[in-house]
Length: 183
Image (cartoon, rainbow, N blue to C red; front, side):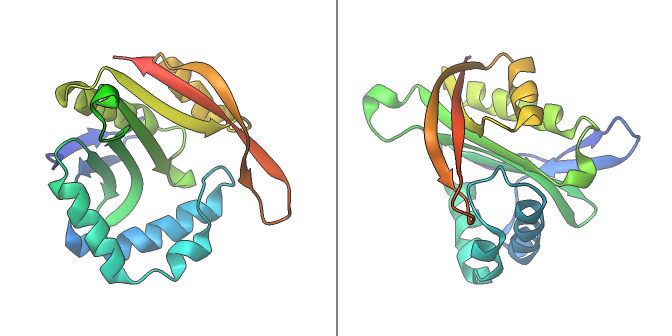
């Protein structure tokens, strides 16, 4: 699904644009992913996974997101620079799970605390409703208090824990909370 562009004003007065990424944004998306993955330990991928990715693979990923009927990827831009992403995807192809969707969100550290996360979260919730989903789901590192606070603010509830969900490079493990919101 294509997300139509809209301009936001952040709490600090800066403006940014939310829109779908286009194929031409692939190289910038890879740069963004390497940066955001370097800034936080709470995401499932490592910066190295994106640093080595061919631009063509990211172009194909973006094109798939644009053509998907029940999925959306929203990208936040400050000028030509990507500063955040949020995505929404079906919980599965089977009929009995078509009412559920999963989501994820990432934001550059420089843009934490200025309202971008809240505005992107509302955009994802609105998209989920418009696509006919009834339940939005996510998982989040139990130590990621900032994200947990955002999700709780929007009505998400913890329904379980996935122990040892992530194995860090140093051999330690991180647990994830499983959270959901009925739409």
